[in-house]
Length: 386
Image: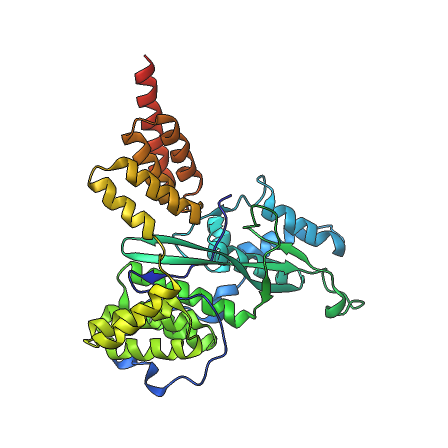
């Protein structure tokens, strides 16, 4: 299964951060409801974890005839065995527990929410966690996404003879570290997970160009978890896309006050200030950014695409390899390295990298696209051998 990640995003060259921290009280002018139309796709926080009738029926089947200590193993098997729930990774949208269960697919956050809902229906204690991972980026058009990670721990089903503190927990992680190393994690409450869900929905609405819905999702994310810093960045990007630069500046200054060294917030603010004619302060921020982050995300990739346009395939190959050295999990990096290798006549590398693009794709559409390209590449190789 493709590793599972929660979704954060940035608008190139505006960036969003992924940390939660202590924040001072937000300024009263942070929200500007009067600038936006009423939402058309909002749901309540309760609906995100709600158990559907189909889920309740499945829980009955899982627990039927089992003793208390066997129930957690049954849920483990349901999640990981291919002959049971058959879960698939799909980053195209963030789903509620019920939606992920019905589709049998979702991103990291969706599947964690679904698992928590099933576990709690089985009377299994749940601890939700935010996990520190290596920085990883994806994109959709001119929107770039910084992916974080969440997982959860499941305890022994509750009984009258056990106290919460005494329950041993077992980890459920749909994206374990490749090298087996233990990543640092910290518990997060349900409100934070709900806010993450809403922030994801805001990002997805922006991708679709639904600015009004994006505003309300971001606003509600902040209401759920005021300490979730990236929700303020999302709100700022909504304002920027809507043409409300003063409001975007307010949100970004607030976030930067909470985390002064955050390069993503800093880059966002520099862009907004520059667009608003505040060139001197924007230049100061850019100088600081260059010190903290001389090679921003997608730097080598973008340079590689320029080299491809110029027909310099050897240089493009080297640049794509440098980007993959920073993050070898993103499908587009593998695809473009395959394209460069093909242009250089290195069909072995092109085939290998296209396979990696296919295996690391995160949506059904991307998977089908790479599968078709891989088939064409193999057909071309077969023709050459004839």
